[in-house]
Image (cartoon, rainbow, N blue to C red; front, top):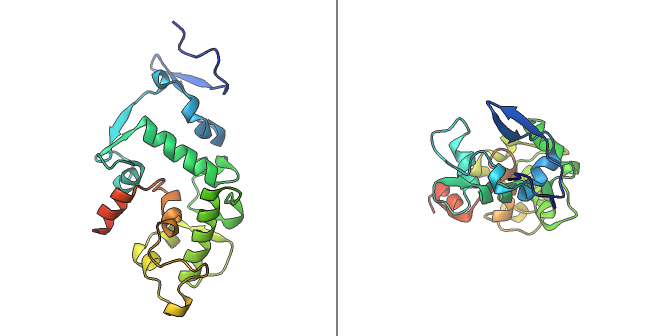
Amino acid sequence: MALIKKDQKYKWNFDNIGGCSRVRIASGQDIAHLDELDVKMWTVLSCPVKGLEIEEKSLKYMDRDADGKIRVNDVISVAKWMTGALKNPDFLLEGKDSVLLSEINEENEVGLKLGKAAKQILFNLGKEGERISLADTADIAVLLFPPVEPAQKSIYGMHRFDYDNLCLYCLFGYAQHSRKALHKDLGL
């Protein structure tokens, strides 16, 4: 029985860990192609959002249906969203807590929204520059209710509470948000 499909387009690299073959995620392209990996090759098919070493808040945003579990489709969805939002998906493996605005791929809808959100957040914070950090996106209150005059509330004419303005919040450790999880977190 073959574990790898012959018609598979992407070339995966494997490691043997404890007698078990596991896919090696070594590049942004590996992350971008997760949807092509046969489900039989996934080591774990689901995990809870609570009780793991990864921050629970991050996992909650990955849990698209807010059922308390991360499944393969959740991971694939997040992978597609993140790799599509960046010009160079290898950035995801660098472990940085900030990104240059020029690294955001504004040639697609996700990246365009993310770029606008990043600029809006920096504007709301009164910061100038070409880099946005996790710290810049950490305070939801500032994102939703920036400390500026109402006439200056938006450089793009967006409402203060706009889900697209929270995309940056997702990129750094919160990956992909679901509206249910966001509402629950905000107590709405």
